[in-house]
Image 1: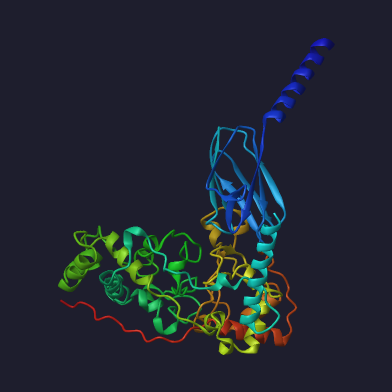
Image 2: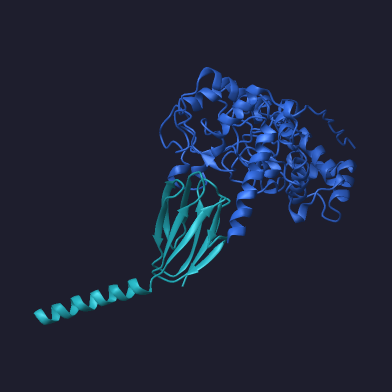
Length: 112
Length: 345
């Protein structure tokens, strides 16, 4: 019984380690009222299930990133320059992400 | 690497020098090019501006027969003599009904990606028919009505002047909801601000702004925090903010996007020709610019869901006066406006 319990613990731990190892973090900047990846404006990004996007504000004013998509509903609240918040996409599908304050900021996250 | 660093530093110094030269003071170092007028008025490829389209749109805009009562035109509320607004705290619509939001100026609306106080229309073409059909505003049936007297398309088709004007503007497309919206939008895109003292100053005319207005500009960009939202050529970030007005009945942008920060948030209006567009705010709460400045000085009245950009400013009496002087420097030269002759046969 004890041996079975230990095997289960090991299995769960290995699964967690494996998941952590393959999941990526993508840093999306908010700069000049646009979403940017590595210095370039983007309107779409493809990530894997389990990946995280870090939304980092690089503008000298607040942003409020949100999504009301069926795939992932979230509201990161407003945050100033230099701060960031993360969202993990744990299901496959398409999410539309916007800034509530500046609606011209729009991007699609395709989760595969 | 060193060359790149040198070029960057050189660019920054040139920029700063230009700013200092323009201001004639040592108080500003912002990139003033943000405030320059864009090269072309934004317009969609499927409704580019032409003389025929603008003329048709102008006739429709000022024709009271566009309303159900045949008494209210777009120009009734968007009056060119009143800064393309109406001078009222909130608009008056069909049957003299007092509406709950102020008439926004349509000056420079071509530069705004979203229309109306809550941004629910994503283009001028999508906005144009809204007030005409709205029961509270112009209460008109554009089509699908059995009552001929209240069917706008049939009403317009009676007049040869309109039939010819639609054909000249949109050959082969006829008189339809779509062409009415396109013509109105085409005309509205021509309503742009003229050069104000601020524009002349930014182009190098040092005497165009008073010293008080220049000090106001420094406050606008600094201590008073105004440029956080009122930015760029049109003095708006085209964004949505709850600025702390007492208005429990209007949820604003939240009705369109259910995100908490948008409860009580409204679109940042342009400050162009601000001296002509009182009363101010989405509910016409303030009659003067002095009252507006005082609202921001105390950090808004209502703290509920307040934008993080709004905070107490502790402005002195002189600073408030300087800010008002700057705001007034955003009002352009008055330009004569010629009303159209409307088709009667």
